[in-house]
Length: 521
Image 1 (cartoon, helix red, strand yellow):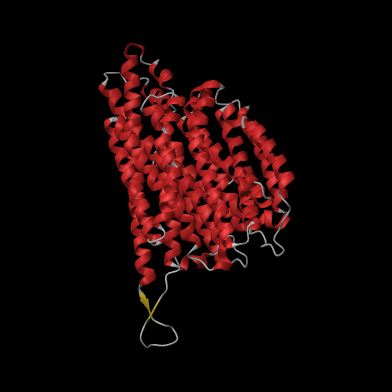
Image 2: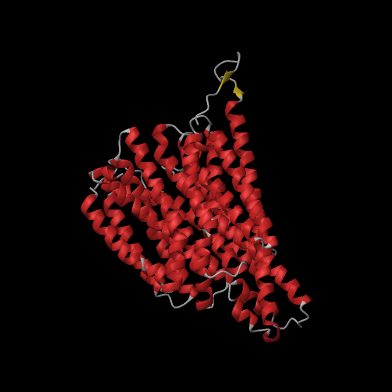
């Protein structure tokens, strides 16, 4: 490893990998400090959802165009612009006076993260041409990303306890400064001599569609699933997504090449990536809420308690690489999805029963499934496309990953809100209260402000806190069950794709005996 980083290509790899890791570190550190942010800024549960969703939304929507911009105008130049913008957006987050100002700054941070990650990936890919060297480079990159995932909950807990939540964002500024110096010194400029033109209608329709659908999912628990607000936003999102698909069909240079989805193997691999992100990777943001609001842990303790999940996510890709010597990619995907489903089922039981030992086991199993998928999903997608389409496939892979994180956080957040609100309302009615403060209690408790919620019932303070924590546990049991169901459904889709790829198909040029398609994975 030391020899690798002493070479010019190794220093490029290290600089690019650290830029990518910064985006992961920031996302997962913020997950730990969310309850503190909610209490100190007086934020609602919807506000807290937007703190995460605004970042991931802009990140996911702009990854493909950011890659095109970097190819056209220079990867080093755009990488430096992304680093500078990320530092400024982090400063805006650290100084945010309100929850609304914070999630606007987080949206800016998501935009800059896209223009940081996309050129960094392209720079690494451009620096290594030999297949063996490229495979080793991506393995090192994966290790650095996994290490960032392990360290982020610990860092988030320590920062929250010692410095306060604002430093979870402010710490990015000196990191960006050092990274910028490394990029200036070690990374040469490169660009694509024949860049693809930007698909502006596709960019606008796609980003608008996922914004409207995200807004609808956040609106649902607050206004009701039968409300006009939810219906209008959901219908708008569906219409915009249908418009995006129609535009991609007609475009000469589409942002998303829909012809790739004619391959059943590609569909299965993309679905597995989405499900991995929505049922396993998203738990890096949801588990801290569970540990703090349902289990009553402080941020530092929650960061330590995340270790079984984070370490499994780091170590299991190595197991996946060994399995790949004898197992097909689809078989590993099915194993990973089923393991994620089992981990979520164990977490659902633990959340309902409040069993601490079962929580540790559930997180380890969930992280193990996630680790298998994290190491295999990208490989499966790239193995189901021709080599000349690798750039487009890589963009689809990354976009489906972060769209899955966004859909998972908002969708599972809606499940959490619905289950927890209903449980709190029922428990408060059983407490013998007149219901005067029930609405305000639920709003404060959903945001994690249990102290403020309990003040509404000063004579029954301990019982009120217990109601809020138990309701969060019930809500999270529903969350884990929904995540398990998603993983199992996609495991079935992957199994279908394997049968579809291996099914005999007639040669269109002759009506004679059928030929057998060759799996691309």
